[in-house]
Amino acid sequence: MRRISSAKRYAQAVFELAVEKNEFDSWQEGLKKIVDLTTDNKLMALLENPNLSFAAKKTLLQERLGKISPLASNLALLLVSRRLLRRSGDLLEKYNELLDAHRGVERAKVTTALSLDDKERDAISHRLGEIVERKVVVDAQVDPSITGGFIARIGDTLIDGSVHQKLETLKRTLVEVGR
Image (tube, rainbow, N blue to C red; front, side):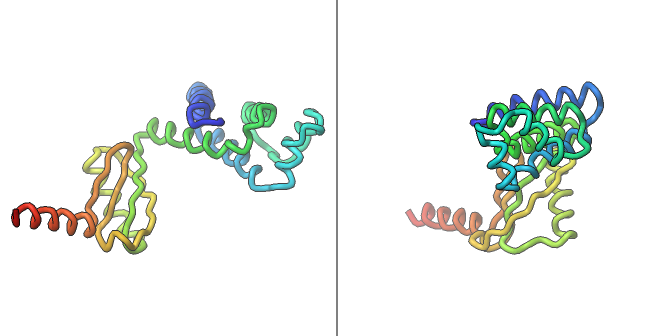
């Protein structure tokens, strides 16, 4: 997963296994456990140590992963053997995207000037859902520079309803009229 494309390939393979056995949630949980391993710097140093035998790395992984599907455990071993475990977060992200698409869910990155409460988040989610004709889950972030309103990105679609953008549009219109 040196590049996003390899994360996509791994995620696609994992997703196909999940579809085949209808084990979407267990794969997601397994992938999360694998990603959680990467937060332990001491463990990662051991797993990335070329002087430590693969058998020892396997034992460490099995102890730390606990109860996890055998296929997810094998994936973790594969990632360790290819020195890609640190990139497992990309794999999980791509897997979640495939799972959302399978379930008919779109994710929208919504930027607002102030943080959203649950009611506002739900209203934006509902409105965006009407636009794309799918269920939309909002991942909100705050950027005070947009002054007000919001900017939403759903896949390749950008919806800019920010006050900053409206002011820029008004400014351009006034400049054009003044010519």
